[in-house]
Length: 128
Image (tube, rainbow, N blue to C red):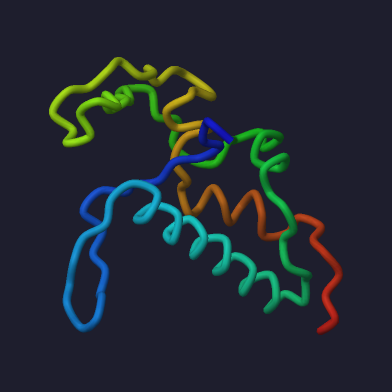
């Protein structure tokens, strides 16, 4: 896919690599955060004897209150392929109200995700 469904903070995310702290950026920082949120919601669902959530993309687009924060200020840049050092940028996309090509549906907010996903029908749980 060329465009995001959701976005999360992904700059200067601390990681521990071989006993040393470093930072990651972009998807390497934001994807684990978002995955952890969904994993925690699945744990909460398990505690309520509900099955895990299945694929969520379609669900996110159907949520009446969205996923949290609609990012409406900002833009993306595309690095010039002839200058991968990042010193020259080509125009990218602008954020907008609702879905946009920079942040998708926006950035998740924990309380909104829990309210929307905790009691949804999920896949069957063998623990029931």
